[in-house]
Structure formats: structure tokens, C-alpha cells
Image (cartoon, rainbow, N blue to C red; front, side, top):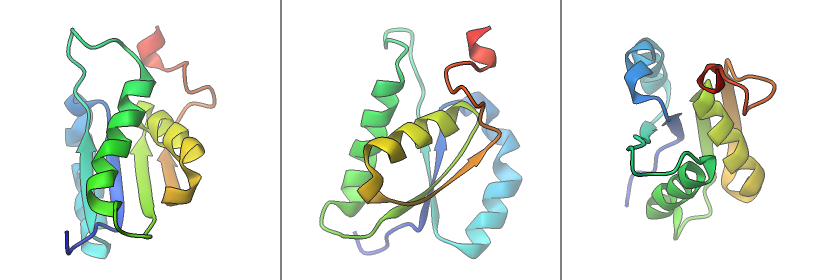
Length: 112
């Protein structure tokens, strides 16, 4: 692909994406940004491993023949996915911006 994104917005809570719109519109004026979304169905086990693998597969379509590193941006539970991805694949992440991520990623409002 000829146009590689500069940043990737991770979203594992699509029902909350309307709250991201203003920030994404602002960021899109500054950098090329793509949105990655994960919608978990009832048939899929609840596992961050699935989301991390899907982020990896998504990024492979852009960066399989490139040495470019991606900038990841994520909010809340999506931030946990971004952090775990960056931890597992540090060579593929330039920087990681986390917004409102709990200090213990497994303990979010979803856990209650």
C-alpha cells in the first residue's frame, strides 16, 4: 500500500466511539490516522490475546514490507490492548499514547 498511516487508534468498545470523534477529527488534521475496531461477538471467548493477534494481523497488511513503526493511540480498555501489543512487539511501535487507562489493566468497569 502506498499510503501508510502515521498512527492507529485502537478501539475495543465500538459503542463508545462517538466520544472519540472530536479527538480523532483533530488528530486527523495533524497526522494520517487509521481506526482499528474490535467487535466481540457472543461466540468469541473474552480474551485480550484475540484482540492483540487481530491488531498484529491488521498492521501486517500495512507494514509487512516496511521498516516503519506505528504510533498507537488508545483509550480505556483499548489502552490495555495497546500496551500489551507494544510490550509484545516493541520493534513495531514507535510510541504509545494511552488515555484514561487503569493502573491494573484487568480491573476496569467491565470487571465489575
